[in-house]
View 1 (cartoon, rainbow, N blue to C red):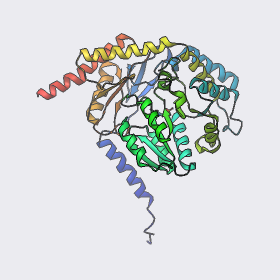
View 2: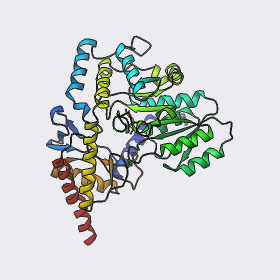
View 3: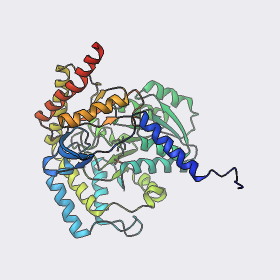
View 4: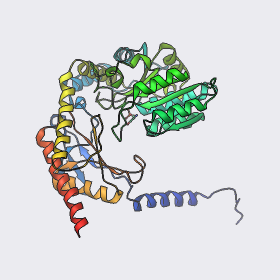
Length: 414
Ligand code: PLP
């Protein structure tokens, strides 16, 4: 039978899909989700189920850093708002999806970050992707200077813009300066970085980057997804702590981690916000957040802003974990944030340890593998929330000691 050679038959597409999944499996990078049953009253403990087996575990992989996702006051704000406003918004922002709840939350976010305006998105991923893509497409000749460890949403946004990108070595001011100097003075440029890096837990040299931006006439864009809610007098983030929010052009954040609900945003000048509102496809052509989620997020931010104790509790837990790790001789990567990173290279081994921690010790810590981290940098990102108790931390340390350190020593001696 005649077959047009330029057409790839559908079987080939299916074969390619199967092959790629199989490669992923054999590399140990295939993602298996654990089915979790959350109980707001018992956070960070949950029950889990896999292949007919059930158990209970302490969660060391949650981004609900302060436990706001399980806070009674936040949950009741959510429920109350569902009763009055209904479940969904029923429209894009332009089609009856801009409610008083959206506008009120945008005002609260703008004020929190010391900016004139804010814009809500379905997630911080969407906020990063849409804002960067819109800037890159619409600002003629714009060049992105992007930190090498930037999150996938930033990479996707820049890539989708089609604009030129120069990647500077992670947190390396020298390299950034060199790249800025390599551009003709008239080239418009924007430096994009995170305040707290999600995987390494490193904090950016914000002051140094902003000084370079000033010297070289660059716009600045900071992802505060892992900073907002945790650092600074009102918890607005690293920029608040360093007194630098007013020097940054665009701040990105999430309502889904420390704030504990769902959604993302940018905070910036009124003109920048109006620009993204007017030209950003990922803002325009999608249904707006449920109004009740906005009400809950607003309540959460208000609680966070006036509850420094809750934040301090989380940092005390992080310090306790690191002290115990040091005392037991368990290595971790040093950083100044709340993210504790254990390096356990080898996707298969890392997955095996994670499985045993869950099934034998009631500890949930999800292995990090490619593409979240580069191959060879596998390991655990350990999160102690404001609601972890010393006893949970101790259980984690003992379990890691048994499953990783002692196994490793045994392996080396064998
Ligand atoms: N930026 C960073 C640095 C992240 O780690 C994440 C993680 O999810 C996001 C953006 C996206 O946030 P969201 O979960 O609100 O989409």
